[in-house]
Picture 1 (cartoon, rainbow, N blue to C red):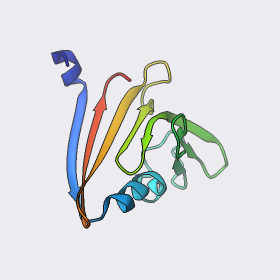
Picture 2: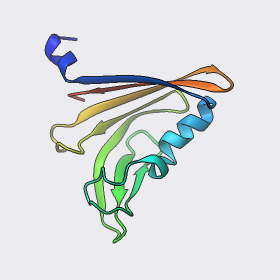
Picture 3: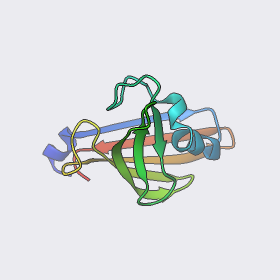
Length: 121
């Protein structure tokens, strides 16, 4: 990775007290529960965030009026270990960034989440 690439990369890791299957499910199927409602394209506090559970699936929000806003698309779907998606919330579809999320089971009650968000997909 060049110096310019590393300047445009966010890397975060966290250990959570839950097993890997539950954490992957919460991150993906229940994203609408934990996603901050003020981080949306619609600005609707009742917006519902969704990730379609397959490679090529959409990452989007559905506002309370039914209008959908695309945020990206799933490029890797390997439950419960790896999820990656393009991301154009804050940019556009022609210049997406890429988010890679790795889930590593530390034991039956702990999972490490490693997130890498870089400037190009």
